[in-house]
Image (cartoon, rainbow, N blue to C red; front, side, top):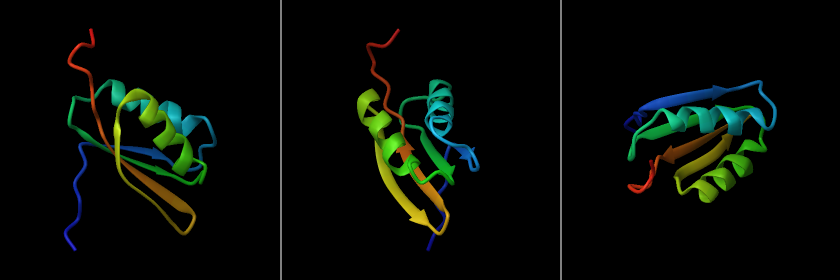
Length: 84
């Protein structure tokens, strides 16, 4: 299996809600349309919270999974061309 490369990574391990979502939002603000982001967290609520935030803001979740006590959410950043 070929390792997947990401443009940015948010390490939200040992952070509880809402911090994984806040860190994701802060990182996406610095990224470009089409960039990829990996969010790694130990708060398993992240598997629902981050995708919900992405749907609300138009970003694409390309994968999400739980492995042991960690979860990973892969995101493709989508920014509106009409945004200021």
